[in-house]
Each structure stands twice: as structure tokens, then as C-alpha cells.
Image 1: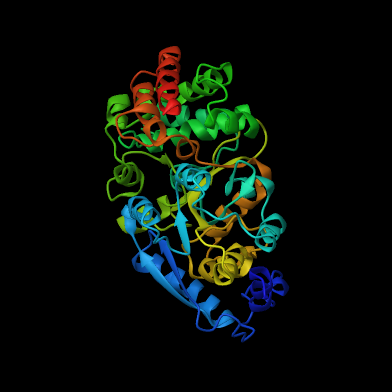
Image 2: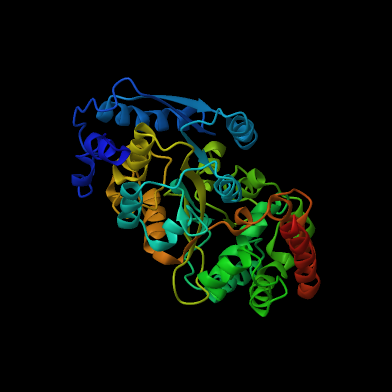
Length: 428
């Protein structure tokens, strides 16, 4: 009997030889999976769908399998839950909610990755990156399409020297404010964008291990390490003159507006913070050019070492047959990531994706920072918590961060609010 691992190895035998090349390995012409049909579900549509389908086409060429892609959009979590309950789960799904992945894994719906797939992940990803796909010590997935959520974007005409440290960042903001400019545009209306501020600071000041404990609620939100992070953030959020419309204006600013406040036709600020996806909003606005008039720098360092908050789409398997195992092996490899990376619009935590495969200098630097963070990369903390706490508009983490932006002086009250919400959410 031919095992799943053996078929996967046969079908993808040339993949292991390609990591030093900028191009994915050529298809070996294997028909080991001829006649096999798989389904893959993800949120992607339009250009993202086309780019992912190119990845799947490469897999089909190598193996002889047929892959059917389903674009489920924002309804993916609900649809997948329904299909799992009805015994109609796809072979593979790209899920951006680690909490949902943990729910599926603990219910026995997901299959732990085969040894050959896990071996690729161990070889090509850092331990920190590998941990993103793990539940209770077992590896169920791999982060295929990552985000760099540790970037500050700025109008190149307004910032002469990019700050490296948190103190230098605050000094730049004060310098601009003292000269009569409004330096910083903050997206306060979507609570998730404010959680990213806290997460970047906490990951640096408390470190990855404490970050993991906070995500699991193994330490309370009243812990002194949380106090320190909020006190650092208050050095920025406590300066009303930094924001267009002051703190009240910042709380009311949605994400697209936070970008056009800096990169629109009538700029109101010089800098904004958010992930690599800011570049798409800049391009959409049409007034600035990414990499030229619009640039970014890494989130300022508070502890003298790099740390990156990430997010994105994690490939998981609901089946463990030969074809599914082969597809998961391919998706874990640098070859698969390189197909999309070359086209643009994808960052990978895979250490063996050649940096020069990315199409422009900005994307190459964003990708390099993700990989260079090594074990100091962590998934977005709010997405690691129960959705009632970390993913609900007007409640929990999102609401507490909005309250903090509105009144940065009362750190203790915000911490207690967070702890009360977390305690209730983790009991459910």
C-alpha cells in the first residue's frame, strides 16, 4: 500500500531542490495523483483569487491532481462551520482566525499534518512562525499568506530621518507638532487597528513568552507588563495635538481615512501606522507612489531588538488522504509561496523564499523584516483570543482600546475593563 507521505514525496520530489532558485521548481510531470480532485476554500477573490489559482495550477502540473477553488469571502468561517457539521468540509481551507482553527482541532475536525509536511515547516520556518499553526503542541497548519503589521507609513516630503527607536519616533512627532504640523493619523473607529498598536508595543516590551501567556489569559490584563505597554502608548495617545481633530477625531477615523489623511489629495498628517496593506490604500487613493513619495519604516524599537506582529491566512487540512497531504506539503514549501510572491500581493514567513522574487523594494523589505524577526514573530494577539473579547465591535479589546485613545490618562481603568471582559470571554 502506498502511503500518503510516499505519494506526496513522489509528486513533489523536485521541490526540495529549488529553494536556492528564484523560480519555483519545474513540474516533474508526475501523474501520481491523476484523477484525484480536491477542494480548497479561502476568502480571496479578484486579483488575489487569480494569484492563488496560479499556485494551485502549479500543484496540478506537478501531481496530475485537479483542484477546485471556492471563494467564500467574509462568510468563510460560517460556511466552513456549516460544512464541517454536515460532513462536507473541503480538503483544505485558508483560515485567518487561529481561535477557529483551535476549535476545529480540539473537536477532531482537523487532521494534524503528516510528518513530511511538518518536516518542511520545521526546515523552512522559524519556531515562532511554526507555532502559529499549532494547537496544544500539534501542528495543524502553516501560515501561507502573511501580513507585516509592524510598519509606519509616511509622506517622504515630511520626514527627513526615519526614527529607529520609540523615543526617536516620539521626538519626530513632537518636532512636527511644535512646528505647527499635525503629525499622526490614527484609525480609531475600527477597534482592531488600535489593538495593533498595543500588540506591537507589548511584544517588544514584554517579549514573546509573555505575549503568548496574555493571549491565553494565563496572566491577567492587570499585570504590570500590560501597564508598562499602556504607559508607553500613552506617550503618543496622550498628545491630542498629534492627531487631526485631536483624540476625539482619532477615535472617529476609519481605516481608509487614516490613510488618505496622509496620502490623499489634501493631506492632514505626515504619518500613519498599520500593516503592509496600507500600500494598497495608498495606491487606490492615487496621489502618492509607494516606494517614492510614500514610504514606510519598521515599528520603532522599544527593547533594542526586532519583533513583528503578523496575521494572515493559515492553510489547514480537514482530510489526510494522499492528495490532501501532497497539497499541504506543496503549500508549506517555498515553491508555492514564490509563485504568488513573484506576482505581488503576498508576503511569506518561509525563510527559503528568495527575497529578490518579490517585485519591488518595499515588498522585499517588508518580507525581510518578517523573516528576520525569527522567533520574535507572533500572530495578531486579538485574533488569538475568544472572538467575544478580541473580535467584536464595540466590546472587549476593541472597545477598551477606543476608550484608552479617548482618555489615555486612566491606564488602570482600561486594564480593569480588559480583565473583566477577558475573564468573561474565556469562561465560555
